[in-house]
Amino acid sequence: MSTGPGLARRLGTTDAVVIGLGSMIGAGVFAAFSPAARAAGASLLVGLALAAVVAYCNATASAQLAAQYPTSGGTYVYGRERLGDWWGFLAGWGFVVGKTASCAAMALTFAAYSAPAGWQRPVAVVAVLGLTAVNHRGVTRTAGLTRIIVTVVLAALAVAVTASLLDGQAGLNGLATWTLLEGGVYGVLQSAGLLFFAFAGYARIATMGEEVRDPERTIPRAIPLALGIAVAVYAVVAVAVLAALGPDGVAGTPAPLAAAVDASGWAWAAAVVRIGAAVASLGALLALIAGVGRTGLAMGREGDLPRFLAAVHPRFHVPHRAGLALAALVCLLVLTVDLRGAIGFSSFGVLLYYFVANAAAFTQEREHRRFPRALHVLGAVGCLVLVATLPWQAVVGGVAVFAMGIAYRATRLRLTAR
Image (cartoon, rainbow, N blue to C red; front, side, top):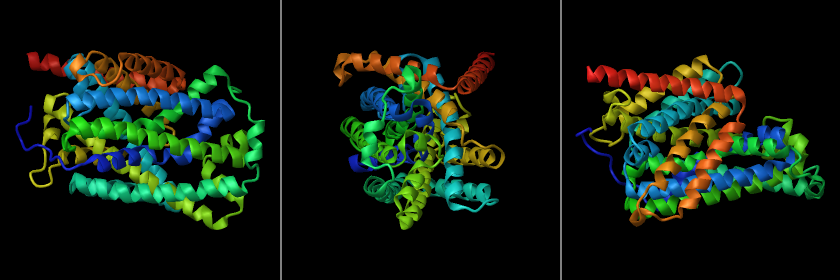
Protein backbone atom coordinates (compact mmCIF):
# COMPACT_ATOMS: atom_id res chain seq x y z
CA MET A 1 0.00 0.00 0.00
CA SER A 2 1.09 3.57 -0.64
CA THR A 3 2.53 5.49 2.30
CA GLY A 4 2.19 8.86 0.57
CA PRO A 5 -0.32 11.57 1.43
CA GLY A 6 -3.94 10.54 1.60
CA LEU A 7 -6.97 12.15 0.05
CA ALA A 8 -8.72 14.91 1.99
CA ARG A 9 -12.25 14.44 3.39
CA ARG A 10 -13.98 17.56 2.10
CA LEU A 11 -17.34 16.39 0.72
CA GLY A 12 -20.61 16.61 2.65
CA THR A 13 -23.91 14.91 1.89
CA THR A 14 -25.06 17.61 -0.53
CA ASP A 15 -21.77 17.52 -2.43
CA ALA A 16 -21.93 13.72 -2.68
CA VAL A 17 -25.53 13.81 -3.94
CA VAL A 18 -24.63 16.44 -6.53
CA ILE A 19 -21.68 14.39 -7.82
CA GLY A 20 -23.95 11.36 -8.12
CA LEU A 21 -26.58 13.38 -9.97
CA GLY A 22 -23.94 14.82 -12.27
CA SER A 23 -23.03 11.26 -13.21
CA MET A 24 -26.60 9.99 -13.68
CA ILE A 25 -28.36 13.00 -15.17
CA GLY A 26 -25.86 13.32 -17.95
CA ALA A 27 -25.88 12.85 -21.68
CA GLY A 28 -27.85 9.59 -21.32
CA VAL A 29 -31.09 11.42 -20.57
CA PHE A 30 -30.83 13.14 -23.95
CA ALA A 31 -30.12 10.00 -25.98
CA ALA A 32 -30.75 6.74 -24.08
CA PHE A 33 -34.50 6.61 -24.75
CA SER A 34 -34.07 6.07 -28.49
CA PRO A 35 -32.36 2.65 -28.38
CA ALA A 36 -34.64 1.67 -25.50
CA ALA A 37 -37.70 2.53 -27.60
CA ARG A 38 -36.34 0.55 -30.54
CA ALA A 39 -36.00 -2.45 -28.25
CA ALA A 40 -39.33 -2.18 -26.44
CA GLY A 41 -41.49 0.65 -27.77
CA ALA A 42 -43.61 2.22 -25.04
CA SER A 43 -42.53 -0.67 -22.83
CA LEU A 44 -39.34 1.27 -22.23
CA LEU A 45 -41.26 2.59 -19.21
CA VAL A 46 -41.35 -0.96 -17.86
CA GLY A 47 -37.67 -1.33 -18.73
CA LEU A 48 -36.97 1.92 -16.89
CA ALA A 49 -38.72 0.56 -13.79
CA LEU A 50 -36.73 -2.69 -13.97
CA ALA A 51 -33.47 -0.79 -14.41
CA ALA A 52 -34.37 1.35 -11.41
CA VAL A 53 -35.04 -1.73 -9.26
CA VAL A 54 -31.70 -3.32 -10.18
CA ALA A 55 -29.97 0.02 -9.65
CA TYR A 56 -31.58 0.37 -6.21
CA CYS A 57 -30.38 -3.09 -5.18
CA ASN A 58 -26.90 -2.22 -6.39
CA ALA A 59 -27.05 1.14 -4.62
CA THR A 60 -27.87 -0.47 -1.28
CA ALA A 61 -24.94 -2.85 -1.71
CA SER A 62 -22.58 0.01 -2.59
CA ALA A 63 -23.80 2.16 0.30
CA GLN A 64 -23.48 -0.64 2.84
CA LEU A 65 -19.99 -1.55 1.67
CA ALA A 66 -18.80 2.06 1.44
CA ALA A 67 -19.86 2.67 5.04
CA GLN A 68 -17.61 -0.22 6.18
CA TYR A 69 -14.75 0.54 3.78
CA PRO A 70 -14.66 4.36 3.35
CA THR A 71 -11.70 4.48 1.00
CA SER A 72 -11.10 5.14 -2.69
CA GLY A 73 -11.70 2.37 -5.20
CA GLY A 74 -15.34 1.35 -4.72
CA THR A 75 -16.13 -2.27 -5.59
CA TYR A 76 -12.49 -2.93 -6.43
CA VAL A 77 -11.73 -2.54 -2.73
CA TYR A 78 -14.92 -4.26 -1.56
CA GLY A 79 -14.31 -7.29 -3.77
CA ARG A 80 -10.77 -7.66 -2.47
CA GLU A 81 -11.83 -7.33 1.15
CA ARG A 82 -14.88 -9.59 1.05
CA LEU A 83 -14.30 -12.08 -1.78
CA GLY A 84 -10.60 -12.13 -2.61
CA ASP A 85 -8.05 -10.35 -4.76
CA TRP A 86 -9.21 -11.78 -8.09
CA TRP A 87 -12.82 -10.68 -7.58
CA GLY A 88 -11.66 -7.18 -6.71
CA PHE A 89 -9.44 -7.09 -9.77
CA LEU A 90 -12.28 -8.13 -12.10
CA ALA A 91 -14.52 -5.40 -10.65
CA GLY A 92 -11.82 -2.74 -10.94
CA TRP A 93 -10.80 -3.82 -14.43
CA GLY A 94 -14.38 -3.73 -15.66
CA PHE A 95 -14.94 -0.31 -14.16
CA VAL A 96 -11.76 1.27 -15.49
CA VAL A 97 -12.05 -0.15 -19.02
CA GLY A 98 -15.79 0.46 -19.37
CA LYS A 99 -15.72 3.94 -17.91
CA THR A 100 -12.69 4.97 -19.94
CA ALA A 101 -14.77 4.20 -23.03
CA SER A 102 -17.62 6.17 -21.48
CA CYS A 103 -15.33 9.16 -20.98
CA ALA A 104 -14.53 9.22 -24.68
CA ALA A 105 -18.20 8.78 -25.57
CA MET A 106 -19.22 11.70 -23.35
CA ALA A 107 -16.52 13.91 -24.83
CA LEU A 108 -17.68 13.09 -28.34
CA THR A 109 -21.30 13.67 -27.35
CA PHE A 110 -20.42 17.11 -26.02
CA ALA A 111 -18.62 17.96 -29.24
CA ALA A 112 -21.54 16.70 -31.35
CA TYR A 113 -23.84 19.24 -29.68
CA SER A 114 -21.41 22.14 -29.49
CA ALA A 115 -18.95 21.98 -32.39
CA PRO A 116 -19.35 22.28 -36.18
CA ALA A 117 -18.56 19.35 -38.44
CA GLY A 118 -14.84 18.77 -38.78
CA TRP A 119 -14.05 20.28 -35.39
CA GLN A 120 -15.77 17.76 -33.16
CA ARG A 121 -12.79 15.60 -32.29
CA PRO A 122 -10.46 18.54 -31.47
CA VAL A 123 -13.21 20.10 -29.33
CA ALA A 124 -13.68 16.78 -27.55
CA VAL A 125 -9.96 16.69 -26.73
CA VAL A 126 -10.13 20.23 -25.35
CA ALA A 127 -13.07 19.20 -23.15
CA VAL A 128 -11.13 16.22 -21.76
CA LEU A 129 -8.04 18.30 -21.01
CA GLY A 130 -10.05 21.15 -19.48
CA LEU A 131 -12.03 18.94 -17.13
CA THR A 132 -8.91 16.98 -16.20
CA ALA A 133 -7.37 20.30 -15.15
CA VAL A 134 -10.45 21.09 -13.03
CA ASN A 135 -10.28 17.69 -11.35
CA HIS A 136 -6.53 18.12 -10.82
CA ARG A 137 -7.13 21.24 -8.73
CA GLY A 138 -9.06 19.36 -6.08
CA VAL A 139 -12.30 17.55 -5.33
CA THR A 140 -14.08 20.61 -3.95
CA ARG A 141 -13.72 22.29 -7.34
CA THR A 142 -15.07 19.14 -8.96
CA ALA A 143 -18.13 19.25 -6.68
CA GLY A 144 -18.62 22.99 -7.22
CA LEU A 145 -18.56 22.76 -10.99
CA THR A 146 -20.80 19.70 -10.93
CA ARG A 147 -23.36 21.67 -8.88
CA ILE A 148 -23.51 24.33 -11.61
CA ILE A 149 -23.77 21.71 -14.35
CA VAL A 150 -26.61 19.83 -12.63
CA THR A 151 -28.55 23.08 -12.18
CA VAL A 152 -28.23 23.98 -15.88
CA VAL A 153 -29.20 20.47 -17.02
CA LEU A 154 -32.27 20.31 -14.76
CA ALA A 155 -33.38 23.72 -16.05
CA ALA A 156 -33.02 22.56 -19.66
CA LEU A 157 -34.95 19.37 -18.91
CA ALA A 158 -37.71 21.38 -17.25
CA VAL A 159 -38.08 23.49 -20.40
CA ALA A 160 -38.10 20.41 -22.63
CA VAL A 161 -40.65 18.55 -20.50
CA THR A 162 -42.95 21.57 -20.30
CA ALA A 163 -42.82 22.13 -24.04
CA SER A 164 -43.40 18.44 -24.76
CA LEU A 165 -46.37 18.06 -22.42
CA LEU A 166 -48.11 21.34 -23.19
CA ASP A 167 -47.71 21.65 -26.94
CA GLY A 168 -46.49 18.29 -28.27
CA GLN A 169 -48.21 16.98 -31.41
CA ALA A 170 -49.27 13.71 -29.86
CA GLY A 171 -50.01 15.19 -26.44
CA LEU A 172 -51.03 13.29 -23.38
CA ASN A 173 -53.97 11.86 -25.32
CA GLY A 174 -51.45 9.56 -26.98
CA LEU A 175 -50.91 7.74 -23.70
CA ALA A 176 -54.05 5.67 -24.29
CA THR A 177 -52.60 4.23 -27.50
CA TRP A 178 -49.44 2.83 -25.94
CA THR A 179 -49.16 -0.94 -25.70
CA LEU A 180 -47.05 -2.06 -22.78
CA LEU A 181 -44.92 -5.17 -23.24
CA GLU A 182 -45.21 -4.72 -27.02
CA GLY A 183 -41.52 -5.52 -27.36
CA GLY A 184 -41.88 -8.81 -25.51
CA VAL A 185 -40.01 -9.85 -22.41
CA TYR A 186 -36.64 -9.86 -24.17
CA GLY A 187 -37.22 -6.37 -25.57
CA VAL A 188 -38.17 -5.04 -22.15
CA LEU A 189 -35.08 -6.60 -20.57
CA GLN A 190 -32.85 -5.19 -23.31
CA SER A 191 -34.31 -1.73 -22.80
CA ALA A 192 -33.63 -2.12 -19.07
CA GLY A 193 -30.02 -3.03 -19.79
CA LEU A 194 -29.60 0.01 -22.03
CA LEU A 195 -31.29 2.37 -19.57
CA PHE A 196 -29.27 0.97 -16.66
CA PHE A 197 -26.25 2.63 -18.26
CA ALA A 198 -27.75 5.97 -17.25
CA PHE A 199 -28.11 5.06 -13.57
CA ALA A 200 -24.61 3.74 -12.98
CA GLY A 201 -23.30 7.10 -11.76
CA TYR A 202 -24.16 6.61 -8.11
CA ALA A 203 -21.05 4.44 -7.83
CA ARG A 204 -19.05 7.64 -8.18
CA ILE A 205 -20.03 8.50 -4.61
CA ALA A 206 -18.65 5.20 -3.32
CA THR A 207 -15.42 5.42 -5.34
CA MET A 208 -14.78 8.81 -3.69
CA GLY A 209 -15.36 7.40 -0.19
CA GLU A 210 -11.92 8.55 0.99
CA GLU A 211 -12.94 12.18 0.39
CA VAL A 212 -16.36 12.18 2.12
CA ARG A 213 -16.80 13.57 5.62
CA ASP A 214 -18.35 11.11 8.09
CA PRO A 215 -18.65 8.42 5.38
CA GLU A 216 -20.49 5.93 7.62
CA ARG A 217 -23.49 8.29 7.63
CA THR A 218 -22.99 10.38 4.50
CA ILE A 219 -22.61 7.65 1.86
CA PRO A 220 -25.65 5.52 2.85
CA ARG A 221 -27.73 8.71 2.73
CA ALA A 222 -26.29 10.18 -0.45
CA ILE A 223 -26.45 7.15 -2.74
CA PRO A 224 -30.19 6.31 -2.40
CA LEU A 225 -31.10 10.01 -2.45
CA ALA A 226 -29.16 10.70 -5.66
CA LEU A 227 -30.59 7.57 -7.29
CA GLY A 228 -34.16 8.45 -6.28
CA ILE A 229 -33.91 11.94 -7.76
CA ALA A 230 -32.41 10.55 -10.99
CA VAL A 231 -35.14 7.91 -11.37
CA ALA A 232 -37.84 10.56 -10.91
CA VAL A 233 -36.23 12.81 -13.53
CA TYR A 234 -35.88 9.98 -16.05
CA ALA A 235 -39.48 8.87 -15.54
CA VAL A 236 -40.86 12.37 -16.13
CA VAL A 237 -38.69 12.87 -19.23
CA ALA A 238 -39.65 9.45 -20.62
CA VAL A 239 -43.37 10.19 -20.30
CA ALA A 240 -42.90 13.61 -21.87
CA VAL A 241 -41.05 12.43 -24.98
CA LEU A 242 -43.42 9.50 -25.46
CA ALA A 243 -46.39 11.86 -25.17
CA ALA A 244 -44.90 14.26 -27.70
CA LEU A 245 -43.56 11.79 -30.27
CA GLY A 246 -45.12 8.40 -29.54
CA PRO A 247 -43.00 5.24 -29.27
CA ASP A 248 -42.18 5.11 -32.98
CA GLY A 249 -41.13 8.74 -32.98
CA VAL A 250 -38.83 8.25 -30.03
CA ALA A 251 -37.29 5.16 -31.64
CA GLY A 252 -36.74 6.98 -34.93
CA THR A 253 -34.56 9.85 -33.72
CA PRO A 254 -31.13 9.90 -32.06
CA ALA A 255 -32.11 13.05 -30.13
CA PRO A 256 -35.63 12.46 -28.77
CA LEU A 257 -35.74 15.50 -26.49
CA ALA A 258 -34.71 17.85 -29.27
CA ALA A 259 -37.27 16.24 -31.59
CA ALA A 260 -39.98 16.56 -28.94
CA VAL A 261 -39.23 20.26 -28.49
CA ASP A 262 -39.18 20.81 -32.25
CA ALA A 263 -42.62 19.18 -32.44
CA SER A 264 -43.93 21.51 -29.75
CA GLY A 265 -43.36 24.67 -31.76
CA TRP A 266 -41.26 26.27 -29.04
CA ALA A 267 -38.42 27.23 -31.37
CA TRP A 268 -36.40 29.00 -28.67
CA ALA A 269 -36.48 25.89 -26.49
CA ALA A 270 -34.49 23.86 -29.03
CA ALA A 271 -31.40 25.93 -28.31
CA VAL A 272 -31.94 25.45 -24.58
CA VAL A 273 -32.08 21.67 -25.02
CA ARG A 274 -28.91 21.68 -27.13
CA ILE A 275 -27.08 23.68 -24.48
CA GLY A 276 -28.42 21.38 -21.78
CA ALA A 277 -27.24 18.30 -23.67
CA ALA A 278 -23.76 19.75 -24.10
CA VAL A 279 -23.54 20.74 -20.44
CA ALA A 280 -24.88 17.35 -19.34
CA SER A 281 -22.13 15.64 -21.33
CA LEU A 282 -19.55 17.78 -19.57
CA GLY A 283 -21.05 16.92 -16.19
CA ALA A 284 -20.96 13.20 -16.89
CA LEU A 285 -17.40 13.47 -18.24
CA LEU A 286 -16.22 15.37 -15.16
CA ALA A 287 -17.71 12.79 -12.78
CA LEU A 288 -16.26 9.93 -14.84
CA ILE A 289 -12.78 11.43 -14.78
CA ALA A 290 -12.98 11.76 -10.99
CA GLY A 291 -14.30 8.23 -10.45
CA VAL A 292 -11.99 6.39 -12.85
CA GLY A 293 -8.96 8.25 -11.51
CA ARG A 294 -9.71 7.15 -7.96
CA THR A 295 -10.25 3.53 -8.95
CA GLY A 296 -6.95 3.69 -10.82
CA LEU A 297 -5.38 5.04 -7.62
CA ALA A 298 -6.71 2.10 -5.61
CA MET A 299 -5.59 -0.46 -8.19
CA GLY A 300 -2.17 1.15 -8.41
CA ARG A 301 -1.80 0.92 -4.63
CA GLU A 302 -2.26 -2.84 -4.86
CA GLY A 303 -0.13 -3.30 -7.97
CA ASP A 304 -3.08 -4.37 -10.17
CA LEU A 305 -2.24 -1.35 -12.32
CA PRO A 306 1.23 0.25 -12.53
CA ARG A 307 2.17 1.54 -9.08
CA PHE A 308 3.09 5.02 -10.29
CA LEU A 309 -0.67 5.64 -10.64
CA ALA A 310 -0.99 5.46 -6.84
CA ALA A 311 0.59 8.89 -6.32
CA VAL A 312 -1.49 11.58 -4.58
CA HIS A 313 -0.67 15.24 -5.23
CA PRO A 314 0.87 16.73 -2.05
CA ARG A 315 -0.97 20.06 -2.43
CA PHE A 316 -4.30 19.27 -4.10
CA HIS A 317 -4.75 15.77 -2.62
CA VAL A 318 -5.95 14.17 -5.86
CA PRO A 319 -4.61 11.11 -7.76
CA HIS A 320 -2.94 13.32 -10.35
CA ARG A 321 -0.92 10.65 -12.19
CA ALA A 322 -3.96 8.41 -12.61
CA GLY A 323 -5.93 11.41 -13.85
CA LEU A 324 -3.26 12.40 -16.37
CA ALA A 325 -2.89 8.82 -17.64
CA LEU A 326 -6.65 8.60 -18.07
CA ALA A 327 -6.75 11.90 -19.95
CA ALA A 328 -4.02 10.74 -22.35
CA LEU A 329 -5.84 7.47 -23.07
CA VAL A 330 -9.22 9.15 -23.54
CA CYS A 331 -7.73 11.75 -25.90
CA LEU A 332 -6.20 8.95 -27.96
CA LEU A 333 -9.56 7.21 -28.18
CA VAL A 334 -11.38 10.43 -29.04
CA LEU A 335 -9.00 11.10 -31.93
CA THR A 336 -9.03 7.61 -33.37
CA VAL A 337 -12.27 5.78 -32.54
CA ASP A 338 -15.98 6.52 -32.71
CA LEU A 339 -17.29 5.40 -29.32
CA ARG A 340 -20.85 6.71 -29.39
CA GLY A 341 -22.05 3.13 -29.86
CA ALA A 342 -20.14 1.93 -26.79
CA ILE A 343 -23.09 1.93 -24.37
CA GLY A 344 -23.45 -1.85 -24.59
CA PHE A 345 -19.74 -2.46 -24.01
CA SER A 346 -19.67 -0.07 -21.05
CA SER A 347 -22.82 -1.64 -19.61
CA PHE A 348 -21.17 -5.07 -19.77
CA GLY A 349 -18.33 -3.94 -17.53
CA VAL A 350 -20.54 -1.90 -15.21
CA LEU A 351 -23.07 -4.69 -14.65
CA LEU A 352 -20.34 -7.18 -13.77
CA TYR A 353 -18.84 -4.55 -11.48
CA TYR A 354 -22.14 -4.38 -9.60
CA PHE A 355 -22.50 -8.15 -9.60
CA VAL A 356 -19.29 -8.25 -7.55
CA ALA A 357 -20.66 -5.47 -5.30
CA ASN A 358 -23.81 -7.44 -4.54
CA ALA A 359 -21.84 -10.62 -3.89
CA ALA A 360 -19.50 -8.73 -1.54
CA ALA A 361 -22.38 -7.09 0.34
CA PHE A 362 -24.02 -10.49 0.82
CA THR A 363 -21.00 -11.62 2.86
CA GLN A 364 -20.98 -8.69 5.30
CA GLU A 365 -21.45 -9.41 9.00
CA ARG A 366 -24.60 -8.46 10.88
CA GLU A 367 -23.07 -5.38 12.54
CA HIS A 368 -22.29 -3.86 9.14
CA ARG A 369 -25.58 -4.81 7.51
CA ARG A 370 -28.01 -2.00 6.75
CA PHE A 371 -30.20 -3.73 4.16
CA PRO A 372 -31.62 -7.28 3.86
CA ARG A 373 -29.57 -9.84 1.99
CA ALA A 374 -32.50 -10.49 -0.34
CA LEU A 375 -31.79 -7.15 -2.02
CA HIS A 376 -28.23 -8.24 -2.79
CA VAL A 377 -29.42 -11.55 -4.23
CA LEU A 378 -31.96 -9.71 -6.39
CA GLY A 379 -29.32 -7.24 -7.49
CA ALA A 380 -26.81 -9.94 -8.45
CA VAL A 381 -29.38 -11.92 -10.43
CA GLY A 382 -30.64 -8.73 -12.09
CA CYS A 383 -27.12 -7.80 -13.21
CA LEU A 384 -26.57 -11.20 -14.83
CA VAL A 385 -29.96 -11.13 -16.58
CA LEU A 386 -29.34 -7.65 -17.99
CA VAL A 387 -25.85 -8.65 -19.16
CA ALA A 388 -27.40 -11.57 -21.04
CA THR A 389 -29.77 -9.24 -22.92
CA LEU A 390 -27.06 -6.92 -24.23
CA PRO A 391 -26.22 -7.02 -27.97
CA TRP A 392 -23.95 -9.95 -28.78
CA GLN A 393 -21.20 -7.64 -30.03
CA ALA A 394 -21.03 -6.01 -26.59
CA VAL A 395 -20.90 -9.39 -24.87
CA VAL A 396 -18.14 -10.72 -27.13
CA GLY A 397 -16.11 -7.52 -26.80
CA GLY A 398 -16.57 -7.49 -23.05
CA VAL A 399 -15.48 -11.11 -22.65
CA ALA A 400 -12.39 -10.43 -24.78
CA VAL A 401 -11.37 -7.40 -22.72
CA PHE A 402 -11.87 -9.26 -19.45
CA ALA A 403 -9.74 -12.11 -20.82
CA MET A 404 -6.98 -9.59 -21.54
CA GLY A 405 -7.19 -8.28 -17.99
CA ILE A 406 -7.01 -11.77 -16.51
CA ALA A 407 -3.98 -12.57 -18.67
CA TYR A 408 -2.29 -9.31 -17.62
CA ARG A 409 -2.73 -9.98 -13.89
CA ALA A 410 -1.78 -13.65 -14.15
CA THR A 411 1.42 -12.69 -15.98
CA ARG A 412 2.26 -10.00 -13.41
CA LEU A 413 1.74 -12.42 -10.52
CA ARG A 414 3.89 -15.05 -12.22
CA LEU A 415 6.71 -12.56 -12.81
CA THR A 416 6.47 -11.30 -9.25
CA ALA A 417 6.68 -14.83 -7.88
CA ARG A 418 9.88 -15.39 -9.84
